[in-house]
Length: 394
Image (cartoon, rainbow, N blue to C red; front, side, top):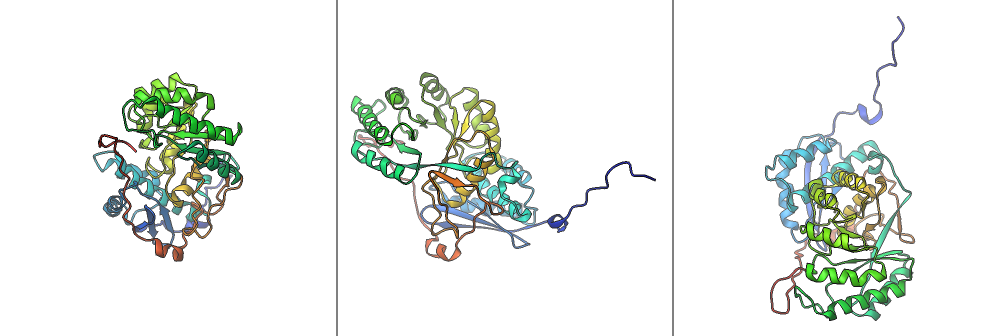
């Protein structure tokens, strides 16, 4: 009797092996302020992640250990299932600690999956949409002269995109409405950087949510002639209506998202067109898949993705796989992150670009010997006060 169809699919290679099982979660503090994670399996495959919230490293380490009983003995390749279970079974959903811890665990599970199958993570997300990853460096200075020199050095290093800070110059008083000297000073510094960099280099500016709304609108308008790539966090990200007002009143693209968590945290920003550039942090917002979902939401609104990453090399490696896989990628923070002294093969950008990772999983390997003198830290977030002694954003 003839067959009515092709023979049943017969899995081969790694698929013939028994399922992996998670055996241990190992968080450890790493200087200067990071928390690394190793997720161990019974087959000897170890996944790497960064489950860190800045200034809360020990809290996050404890939270990782609290989730360990939920994951021991489980199949690490059920990544989305474990994310959903840990998120929903906490009962109190969300929050920066839970989502940061989930992010690092999720990164490690993707690393295991890629190593188990022998492919880079971005190939599990649909394959690369580009051949290399554009990264931006940092520059700046307290005077126009110092800022211009900083920009010239960065351009000489090969960067064609840079980000500079705001709100920390000598004329900042921490007032709700800053005096004209504050705006004049900010603009003079940015203008000097634009002149030094030329018209082909992108320069973004980060207000860090520390400029009050009453001052931010004035400052944004004054910066328009110098064509910033974007203004990041012109006000606190939770202030979505004001963020939308600013976005609709300026020609400069508005960026936000480093302090938003999960797809639900980004929904209102997109619906109100409060930003056209989203900056989810893959160690805070929920991990690689959650940020892939956020990128898909953003694409539907014609918004771009520029992932936030001021952390360590594992976080940056995770970002590179997302950057490779999404069509609406803009630029990656972390151009100054090399992983030197942490990774066996550090990152090396060429003319402002990093190559696609080629190794399985996240494509990185820790340099265990070099790490020995970098274990443990007691890093804390900085403090900032206004001229009258009141606590302010920094």
